[in-house]
Length: 232
Image (tube, rainbow, N blue to C red):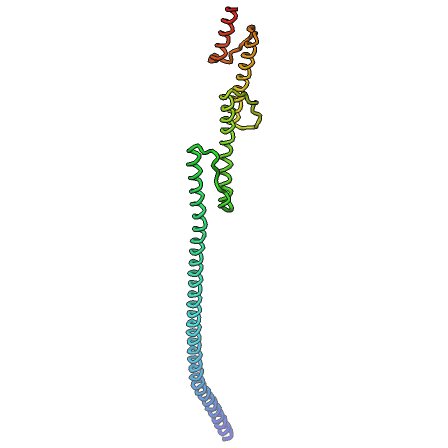
């Protein structure tokens, strides 16, 4: 009996322990259900808050981008307007002097073509590079007119019977060739003058050298001296 009673007590204790464990698990399961629902609600609320924050951030970013785009567009338009304004000012500041220089150049060309070799450009009415340009045109004219005027002066003196001194000024290129030819003409006129003076003094024994096959003047002097010698 004692053994049966002990075994019955052990079974009762085991059953009570199992029931206790089952009750504890049931309690835990109930708590999990309750807390799980709360956690789910918290998660849903947190997701909603995140979505709201994302929407607000996206809206703010869109607003900033829009404002930034407007600012950039405004700056671009203002810069373009300033550039156009400066271009107009620069164009006017360039085309004005260019037209004046063209007008002045045309005046110089007309006067030079009409034989007014003393014509020069009025550089004082221009500034900067335009003044330098007109001065350059004047120097160019001077480079041509100076030897031309010198040649005209010497030919005028020779044509009037005056024998000028030889040219000693320095010239370059073709102008230097003109200078050499004039000096040769002066030498020839001086030689002819000397021969004429010798002949006038009665010296008929003269050596007249022809300067070229086309030297008709010296050839004629030789014939004259020969005939005078025949007469004498």
